[in-house]
Image (cartoon, rainbow, N blue to C red):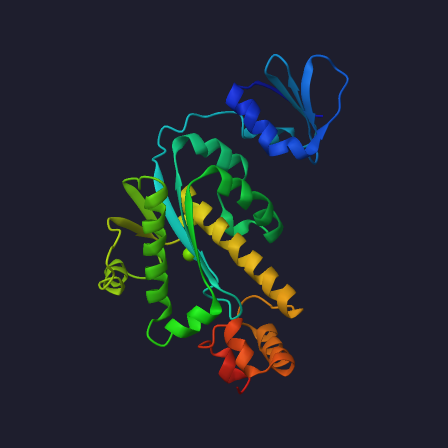
Length: 283
Ligand code: MG
């Protein structure tokens, strides 16, 4: 059995409790302040501040607390969007700001590679991120989408939503020097889409797959996905209908089923009507 002992600072002890309080168990040892039993590990926090990680996954759990000073970390804001490839449901865009003091917390939640995170984990960790970092979230519902779509292409909508997220974020916290967008179009095209906007947040660094490189973009991606999942959940409850994600053949089948039950007109409240799926099913 693996055993790892570490001495934790006060803030690390708090972090440990934040992360694992759901798994706390009673213990009779007067020297152990808290004991947690998440999957494949027993974590004992002693009154001295020493933490002992024991079990098959001891190393994984302990690694978040073996602090390697991240000297290269630069405070930044970042944003990403979800729902643009989904026929059903809204478009959600979120910008977040991450400072150095948030890094170990976010890394211990596994924020890094957001694309690999399951929906289940998104639902668990997003609320914790939302409590911790400043963010601005916008949800473009289907009614609004179908209203603005004839005059705005998808990237134009994205550009306007990202820009508005940063404007909203700037009202909550000072925008840092570095702002990163997970790139969806050329830089000059982005600013062209915004040319008639009263306020444009500039000096943005655009890069593809930014959610793997920048924690704030990863946070933006996770929070947007959380909002998207919650919106889909609400739609399912309202219509007692299971809306598939994406734009594949399961969606085509669902369109026909939905129209049969609720009529074609109702589609504009739950779907993006300019998607090719509509023609594909002959509507
Ligand atoms: Mg993206």
